[in-house]
Amino acid sequence: MNVRTLTLSLMLAGMAGTVSAQPYTKAQYAADTKQAATRYAEDKKLCAEESSSSARMQCQRDAKTEYDKALAAAKADLKNAGAKPVACNDCGRVIAVNVEDKKGEGSAVGVIAGGVAGALLGNQVGSGGGRKLATIAGAAGGAYAGNKVEEHVKSSKVWHVKVQYDNGTQGEFTFDKDPGYANGDLVRSANGTIVRR
Image (cartoon, rainbow, N blue to C red; front, side, top):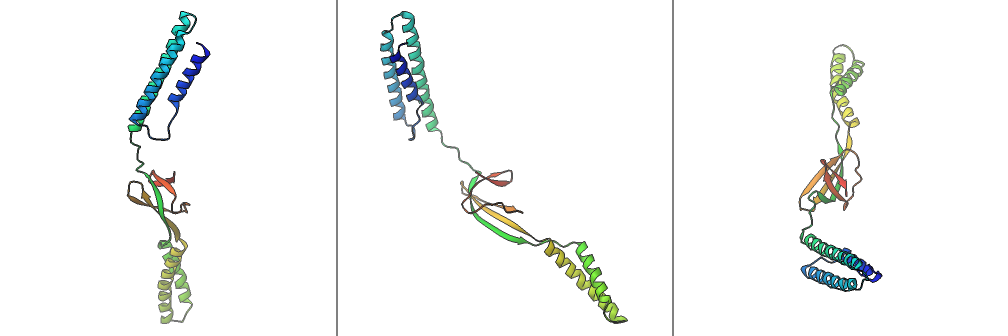
């Protein structure tokens, strides 16, 4: 194959591989197929100038191959242009991040420890029947105080992240640690939580 034929074939292949930033239309498909046919006709004329029959045949095979590639690329572009983009139903944007204090839960340990401490302190007050009353009151007050102290010690912060999905729905996710999200962050749902996208 001579240099001109090779150059034209490479130009044809390059044109078939170019991607337009604009949507591919039927008019563009028609123009591309017409351009491929024109190049193919020019390549066949160049092939006729080859000196030997084997070189002419090889040139014609190469020209036909490039023509077929250009047509296939144009058909693929037209088919892909007709396909609608796949919507991401799990994709969204963070619209709110709220932090709140989560009240801790008291247990029997706090009540018992507080009750014992309160009873010991109550037992230090008064004598006779007053001491018994002070011990009971100390135990009750200590139990209540022990429960409250345990609740305070076990309290923590919780982050609530609200997401507006691209499909119009909303969701809310709760985190025990700061997830690092801010309003406007792009996220998607994954395995019951959200991740950046």
